[in-house]
Figure (tube, rainbow, N blue to C red):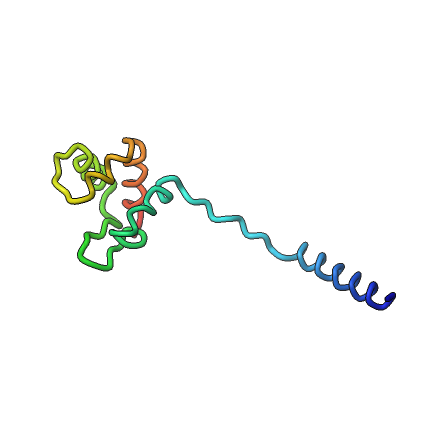
Length: 105
């Protein structure tokens, strides 16, 4: 019994020492614009880089994306589903989404 207790004590002490030496990486912070942009990935691809026939939006200027989303939302620009998606966003959210995709290279 004494031997098992000693072994357990040494093991736990070693583990505790190792944990205090292990570097702690800060969690990557996700911006609100990036978080909002996740819903776009289903059609426009991860980070707006479309693998298919739907246009890529990564790297387009933030102004271009913002204008397009607002036009879809108002019905000024015809669409199949984009008008419905855009209606769910406020002006601030559209600006954040546009800024995020505008920054993706």
